[in-house]
Image 1 (tube, rainbow, N blue to C red):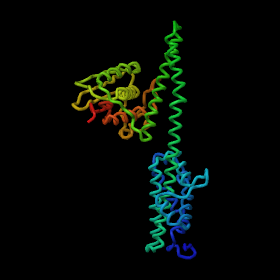
Image 2: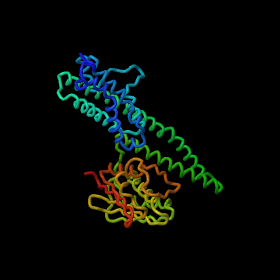
Image 3: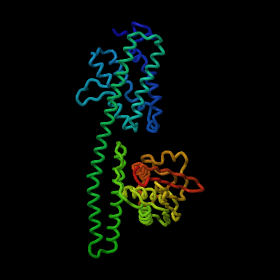
Length: 389
């Protein structure tokens, strides 16, 4: 039979009664811990950080006071609980939905349950120095209830992510790509037709350029989506010369340079096996970054050099140095800009370029890093093996 607050002193409470009587200090520790889950927590109110913890604690206390069979105990020890009514959401499921909306990642949300477990046990054991057999039973059932709530939260979180991913991919793959493709084809036909006047030719060329840039954004977002959901960026290695690819991309990007001279030096044997299109993305993204963050008219230099089993690619610009605190996150998803920034009409600037470049280099078993200071400028360096080991 469960002891009640009236049947025992506060220093000798069964765990569910202790939880009910100490909601406030438990919630305070929950909020304090949630505040450390940055960066999402920076802009959250105390009420938002608290979220559904009171309801979760009441669920746990109710569960501890409810009789269960051996079969139910085995199921709950695996994080499985009874099904909810159709369309009804548990407090743990609602908590997951809100944490996702607030920007918590799944590891941060799971860590809240680990902290909650430690907080409740710590506070309870501070009041109950000697544990009875019933207390050990309470601890076991408490852990089962925590596991059940955490499983519900994780399942809800991952289901929501999957639905968002499928919707996102559907929009990219059909709703946006098809009309952009149609507009691009129509513009190309306009350019090739007869003798249009000068204004028509300029407008058609702008449509072609704009749709090509929009298609690049879609392709970048698709790559990011694959990466964010645990799928590596696919690569197809073919024999190629990295120096030739570098020359081609430097020449193409020169037209976007706003007076910046892009020079390239190829040193030694730069032939190997890489994905031609993907490594073209790396060059394009690094050169685009150099153009965006360097003064108009300043030089940009590219080096493609043989290093025995590897090829080293370096892209240098004389823009503002990258602050040291930005270096560690420069290749992160949606890490935008590192200085005042100099943009042009061709810059998409979604914070995807360096992130995607890093993923492509990693898919080639290579590495990418950056060095930047006020004397030497900024140099992005890529090292990729010439072939698979």
